[in-house]
Image (cartoon, rainbow, N blue to C red; front, side, top):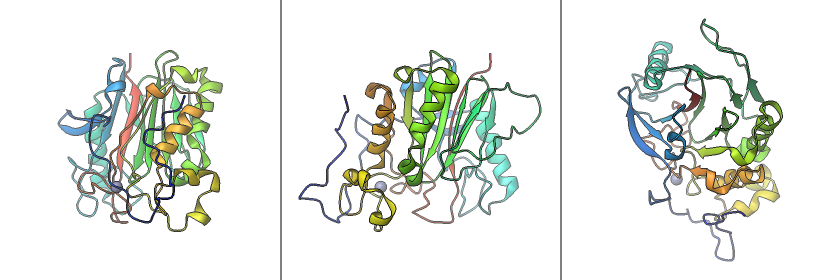
Length: 285
Ligand SMILES: [Zn+2]
């Protein structure tokens, strides 16, 4: 059964006013904590699993200078490579054990299934992928975003984690469904066992698509909350439940990055900006 509490249909009252930003409220799924001296956010429903570690970073606690201030974790912009290296070291330190794993994100639907054990040497090349899945403890799957959604998943039965980069292109292509399919086919997961969390990202208040008739398929126009605004959080939740996840195992962070540019990197708030991270992985044994 789908929970449609936050899916507002654009009925006769739909207009082009900007929908209200979601308030923190009891449904807010993210809790601020300190990890290794770094301010991060965690989802309580994931934090209860002792052998799992995860975190969502903010833009605080790093060394990058404006416009990448301060905890920019991406090398794709023109930030100082030394600053990004130090910022990544701080994130690595906050997670205490395991190694950060990055992919080349291109707004596609390629899912990297990472089954080999951690090597002792440096960087683990994943290549181009907008989702990663692994059953190897110690691999910390890292997705970088600035308005796009990071969708973290954990199956405690099969002991499998996944992390997805789903911007609006990924939402349209259903990279979420593609990732759950890989978890089932390659790792033997049952969707009903999987927990999921959608990180800070563009909310219905700010997901404005003036050219939506050209950019977004009509089948998804039901997610419009005004003439030009879409609720991609609701779409992701529905894609997760359509893939077989139980609604009560899904949490939406409900924090809009565009509404909080002082706290998160937001592409729509300033195109020259950094990227924050969502990280998930099982602790090494
Ligand atoms: Zn907003």
